[in-house]
Image 1: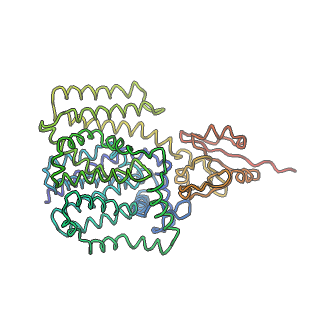
Image 2: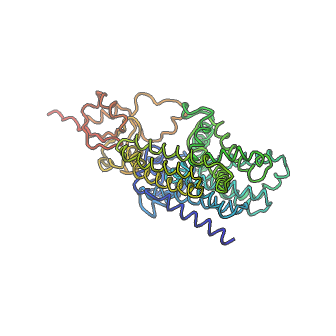
Image 3: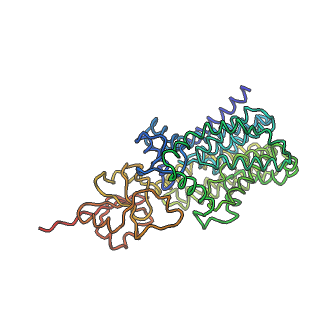
Length: 533
């Protein structure tokens, strides 16, 4: 048992080292990362660790867990990029460690368990999201523990597994809301239906399990209801949960095949092995046990979010856990000569081509003559190992290529992408109060995070009445009022890069002078008109 636990700890530590690489050079970006980072900053500065707020106003977008983690990280390590990205890296590493432990706990040998951890840690979406300032890595870990411990509770009928499952579900609800309970509950019921064994329901430990759940999750939610009442219910439960599920926030993405395309890309370069597992092990899926549970977990998650109106790339992120376990099983078969190498080499080649093309199309990134030679070497060696049937070496080469590609992308592409989506380089040009600062077009929350100076979002006419209007809590000001104030005192304007041309053509801003520019945008100033003598 001790060896099993220590192996899981070792995989988590190694994963953490990987997930911390280059985090210090990735500035906090707009819009989502900056929202979380700024809310955590205000939590730390206000001393109010219960009611999240942003721009000085209460903010009911997400529950409190992620803000607690970020604020704690800022308190320990300062307001910087490394601290902002630390919680995601830690929980992503914990997810890898738990994948190793769960594999061992369900009967896998050490080799299979390590392969599971390796597949998960090196999947494209996993190593990307492990570095982002989002809720998803935290939710992934708690969701994985919920589903994993629930399976152990069902298969072994032991109470302590259920205790950790309910506790993890409660923490998931404190991370991202009701989905932390609703989705695992639906998946477990789907598994019972698939097994056609209603006696399994008696193993759920409903009574004391729900008591444990409520003891963990109840205090914060009750506090919020007591303090904020209807506003909390209508905004958090209504807008950010019910409305999100029924009204698409991004209608262009609302297609039934959204996750059918996204999920295989998310699992690259291991997605081919998952498909091979499905094709070659259909009988095992039908027979039940862990294989059936994993497929219900994966397929049910994809179906659940497909039925939701709003689509996000990160929604099915937790489904990478069962996908990694299934792909790792097939990878073990491949190493034993019982699966074609093409299920790995083809997706690996696709991944490197995608990373190379991404870097090539990022302005100021490494030029073509720098990007494509290493990609060509990776592909040539991959083809040689495929031809020679060197299975062990091929897997090692794929993993080495993933690490090399990740480092290249993070140091070149990701850093440049982040710089183009962050006002970090412009923070020193933003004046402090009482100077009036406005934001033209999209609101750069990262400017507020880095400068500590709240800007007004400039608006034309009356605010819209669309369902998602309630998301925007920053202070607002009519453009004409902003310009009238500028007749008597100096005013400043924040403009993102994509709105620069539009602003330049707007005659109302012709008197604004450029103070500082950066890849993300620019800061302008207008001096007041001279008073008549």
